[in-house]
Figure 1 (cartoon, helix red, strand yellow):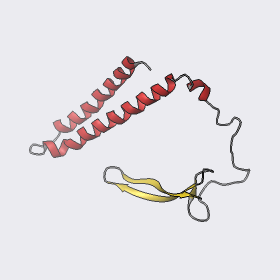
Figure 2 (cartoon, helix red, strand yellow):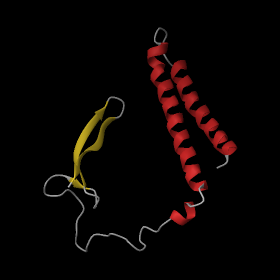
Figure 3 (cartoon, helix red, strand yellow):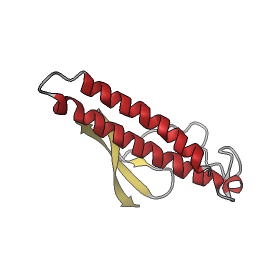
Figure 4 (tube, one colour):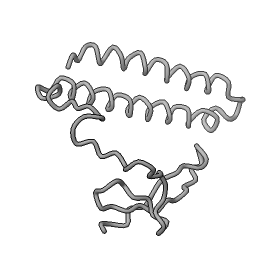
Length: 127
């Protein structure tokens, strides 16, 4: 894991996200500087934090001595493809089957104020 490379990559991302937030502040009408730009700054900080963590963890994974040994082919031995003619979708009970680990998930639709509808599921437990 090359720290300097990661820091340089994240400095570039920070500059891009911070520039967007500054644009929001610059374009905010007089008297509304804070309420018209604070979410842009919040989103910029969250984006940089999330992407920084993802980049650093991925670099650490790739640098780990067992990274190459852990690589696998999705169509290699142990492939659990469904039988011919099987269709993807929900079970008759209305739950989504995860593919064999015993956890059933009930589909739900969440609504985010910032992003609109977001699909997700609620784990029901094993069995």
